Image 1: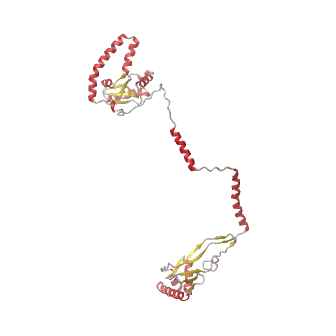
Image 2: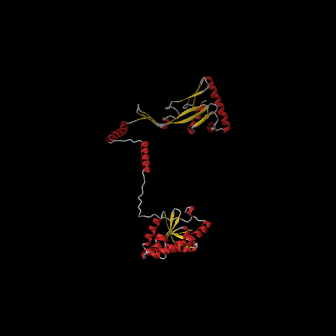
Image 3: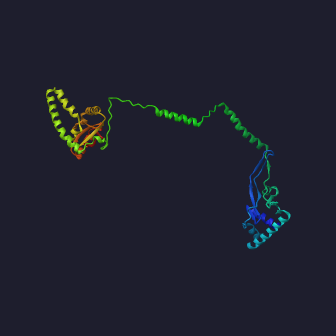
Length: 348
C-alpha cells in the first residue's frame, strides 16, 4: 500500500496527470502568486495536487514507473499495479479512508459512493512552496511607501487638470450637425453668369445629331426637285436687287444671303461637309464667323457658311462630293487656325 503511494509521488514529479486505474486521476495544478493586503505578505507561485474521480482509464504512466522502479517488464508491472489497486479498494471499503503516500493526501469514501480527496497542507505537501525553496515574504515599508506614492501621483495630476475646462461633445450630435451642413450646401442655388457677347461652341462626332436631321434618299430626291425651281427664282430676284442697290449693299447682299443655307441647299453642293463649329442658334454662329474672319489668315481660301440642322446650326468650311475630298479639305482647314483644329466631316 505504501509502495504505490511512493511510486505515485515519483510519477507526479515527472507528469502533471497520473491515473490510478479504477479509482481516479491525480492532477498537478499551478497556483498564482498571492498578496495578502491585511498581513502585508507576498506568497510566491506554486503547485497543488487535486483529484478527479471521473478519469479511471489506464494511461500506462503508473505501469512504466512500476516497471522502472521494481525492475519488471511492463506486462508484469501492470499485474502488480492491479494487485495494489485491489488492496487499496478493499481498504477503502473496510475503513472508509486511506492515506496515499506521505506527501499526497487522503482519499475518503463517502456514503453516496463518491471519492473525496483531501491534499496535505501546502507547507508540507509534495508540491508545497517550501519544496522549491520559496517562502512567503513580507513587504518592506519602503516598497509600500513607493506604491502609495505612485497611487498619489495620478490623484495630484487629476487635481492639476481642474484648471482646464473639459467639454464633452456627443459624437452622434456632431455627425448630425455635419450632415445638416452638407444638405444645406447641396440645396444652395448654383447660378452661372451668361454674357451675350460670349458664344458657346462644341464639336459633335458624326452620328450624334438628332434623327430628325437625317434626310433619307427619297426625301433628298423630292427636295432636290422642288427646291431647284425655288433656287433659280431666288437667284433671279437677288440679281435684280443687286443691280438696283448701291455698291455697298450690292457687295453685302450676296454674302449675307449665302451665309445661312438650308440642308437641301447644302446637299446640292455635295454629300460631305467639313464642320468647324456647332451652335444653338444662327446668331451665335454668325458671331463666331465674324470673330474668326477678323484675321484673314485664318479663313484664307475657305468660305464659312451656316447650315441649319434641326435645333443646331453647323458652321461649315466647305462641302465636297466625296468623303476623301472632304478629308483633304478638313486637313487643310485644321492647319489654318487653332479654332479649326477640331474640324470633322459630316455626311449630309
